[in-house]
Image 1 (tube, rainbow over the protein chains, first blue to last red):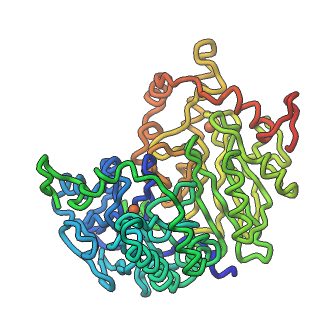
Image 2 (cartoon, helix red, strand yellow):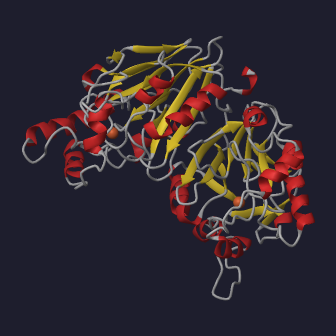
Image 3 (cartoon, each protein chain N blue to C red):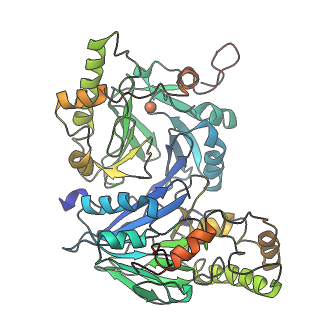
Length: 268
Length: 268
Ligand SMILES: [Fe+2]
Ligand SMILES: [Fe+2]
């Protein structure tokens, strides 16, 4: 219905920018509370290749970057977190505790990440990786309305992230099934229960979409609208190639994207 | 100052989507008045390669597409206007009268294009091409706030479109200078006089930016902030290659992107 398809979010405090990295088709998000004298800001899913661009924009807009946050340990690109920390060591890296990656701060489902008067809520959306979380803008008089969900790869526009990364389907059928169940059930539980007009901002899009809504995905998502058995069938038959950058990106992203020659974290 | 750097536009009526075409790095914009029973919608700068995607999205969102609008005769991609009209012949193609291209409707500076209760104003911003216009959301209680400017190639984020397309610098120095003067002066006159918090939505971005503001570009645009002689010097020394798609795209775009074997317009 029409209630699902509203205009962009409104807040008297929020500055918001969506940024694209072409090679991996990754979206990075910049959010700041510009009503606060410091203009505290955070980046969601920065990429190493565009860290200079993002850092320059933060400076031009007069923001104080306090957090560089990842939705999960990415397998297709190296996070920009480490590079941003070398540019400004006061920035804190943030990732979920369940990711088992290194960072300055670890978040768990239910935690709130404040920047000025605004905040993001952490919701568990595992399945693409064990530690995948979705960050959702808060509820309250000054928070953006409609709400905004940064879903990482758990929920993509008319799709979802692959579920074969951290389990081997061939040797661990049961774990793979569990991963699929978790993916679909937790996405339904923690994203599709949000108001229908909530904006969905994914970590990637390959067709040029920039945003969707919970209401739209509940109707048109070709995977997550299916019953569980159909969903499993779809995900098990994707026959996707091994990700080109996985062997390099995952170890790097476990340590914020920067490691020295011995693989020791330099900037987490 | 902070007044230039606000959050996204707010309107109780506007549905807004930014869409990207990767090959030519083109942004297409979908706007609709969802408060109106018909949900009348328009597309700004659709691309032939993504016309199916855009048309499907319009259907999924339950919109009634009434206009397919171009900011100018593009040289780097073929407009999706003609293809969209073959899918839905009730859609009217729109371009500026000064473009000399074919279309169903021609607009001139000062004209208003209504979709439901919302409208776009037409502003002359020639220089990249003679017929370049910028479409700006209206002023009024129900119109989006801050305003939104769809600048085509006249004003890009931290840049502007090349000014050597429709004049030959080598043989027509004076016309080229005129084009450069027009470009900078009209952009200053018709875009930089908008409120500083006006969002700038360009036809292209090559670095992954999705939006800027008038206030930001007035401070950080490396070309349009320069005095006229410096601007001319920059634009004359870009030494850009002849656009790959120009010889195909310009004739096609003069007739809405579709022509038969004799070059006769099929769907304008
Ligand atoms: Fe991922
Ligand atoms: Fe152009």
